[in-house]
Length: 90
Image (cartoon, rainbow, N blue to C red):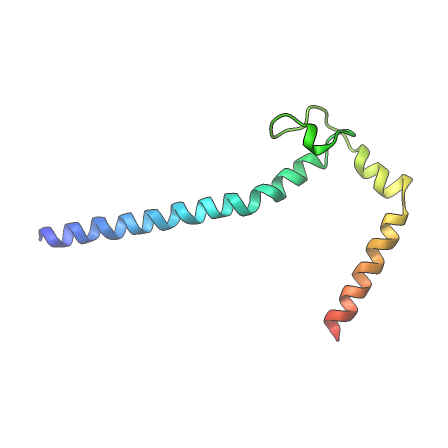
């Protein structure tokens, strides 16, 4: 009876260890994506000058710059998408 209880605790510990590992791995993988998404809304402040995780000033000026003032970016984006689709299709 005692051996079964020890085995059950060992299995629970292994399962808990696995969950902790997966959660830490998810944080490591998702952190750069979340960091870039959050800093996409910074107001004309370089990412490396922000103190902490969140930018000090929020805005949509970066998106305005890319989509309205410099539409050549969209042309390059659609060209890249077209080329990628052509390569994938065959």
